[in-house]
Length: 174
Image (cartoon, rainbow, N blue to C red; front, side, top):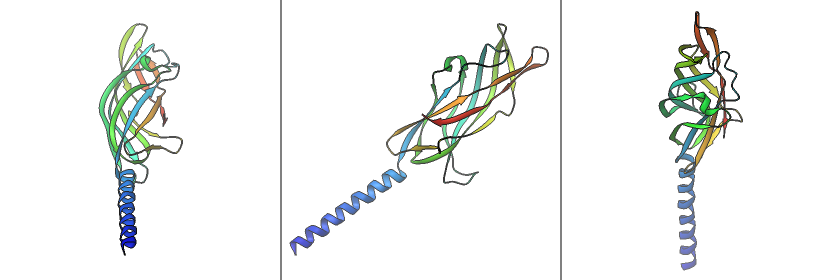
């Protein structure tokens, strides 16, 4: 009888531990750090590009298109010359453990430097929805995951016509 009590107690303890581990891994939270990098500049006539962005969000892979969006960070700005061939963190936040497949943020404004003069540039299609390549990014409970946004904007126009920033990007696990 004592042996059976011990066996049952062991099985119960193992079940509780396994259930807790499953809940922690499946429903716990981890941290996502979003970094930005710009390849060697090919910005057209601009020698500097500064962008303002808002609401960095990621989409949970197992959610519907319009639901499943989670905010990683709210807003910021970046001088793209500071991320030429080196990444810089632009957002960080806790996320429920799981796979995420799209990152979204809005480019809300831009300033470009052409021949030493700063100009406000209009932003064509400022909303960027960027699929995360390599099958998305996995955020595990208690862990930190890194997502790299490789931005490749193009500046068009002139001083007379006005300058436009055409953003393009890709995202990948870091």
